Image 1: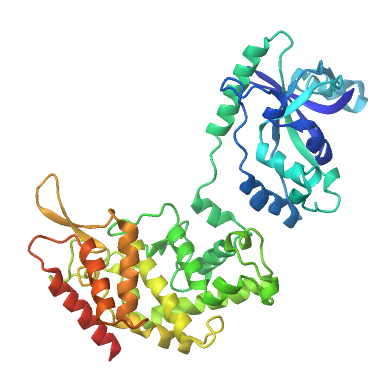
Image 2 (image 1 turned 180 degrees about the vertical axis):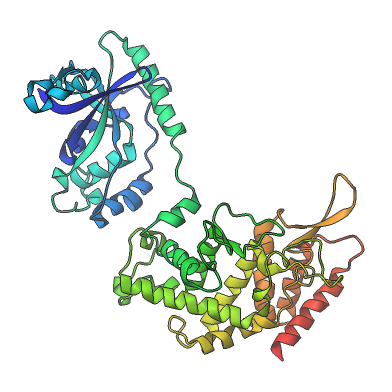
Length: 474
């Protein structure tokens, strides 16, 4: 016989019970669908395929590395066991007489009894279940990971769903397939903006928030519900908006800026190489020490200060510098590469390469050293209608309504275009030397991606690229 203190609840057609189970009970008693039903046909294959990599790399790591670990309730279906709920009358205790007439409360608390021959399986939470089993009941020694001290006695909330006594098993399975499907279909993860705003472990989220709050370039003067410089909802930027960049884009840019070649090769963390975390995805799951957070913030702030000092165009007003149809010929500010996510990615990637190449100690630069390393980027014409961006990042397309041509940010073959833009810019700023054959290969790759008006000659545009290289090298 098994007894559980329980809270009875109803929703829709379901009556379910909220109980608590020790981790060791979950590990030993709650099964997967394949263990309860041996039939693997579609009708009875309720469980999803468990992703072992997610269990080991994410959930087990979370459980073993976080003293503040916490799980949402597991949803468990019970088969057999002659379950019966015994309400406990709170009104029998004089101090709870006030509840005597509240039927919804009076009938909710009690004890759920099973005879002992029941089977449980995870209707929702099978990956969490697998992680608990990996720590407490691994299938083999190669899977074993030492659990935190006392983990077996920690408790988790379980929502126990029980088959009604008169319900045929076929109908029961059909109902549970629907419930399983609904739980997974309508469970929506938080979006990336929310994760960046809320995450207290991801170092890049922490630093991005702090940059918006503390750095003069990103913060808004006074108190505002929304940042005036960083768009906090959604990634795309529209023409004419005041934002310099989006929250998601700034997060990614900060990640690139802080990924020095030393960290890429030796790992993340303040200690010696043996103590560093080589996988950045694993590193961001656990909050580092406050000293290390402060160290990285000062480094990141220095990089942005150096970029702003080295590249005058960054001081332009975003709402003026974001207009695809403006080439600057009518005295208006030209559409500028640096105010679009695609251009910011190119700029920061090449900036990181220059810092790695020119700084004697990339992780501990001075502002003067960083500005000097990034100075070639200040000699670039970032106007999107100029080479090498024209036709590569900003493309000429035919307007279906007017049959006129207009300029638009590239969407087709975007990944290849961005990679080529990075390569061309690295060549322009002297990040690497190229012989004639290598230059021809680079030019042909760039040329093959161009989408220009019919009357424009790519050869002339490449000459402009060569002129830009000559300007930077002087």
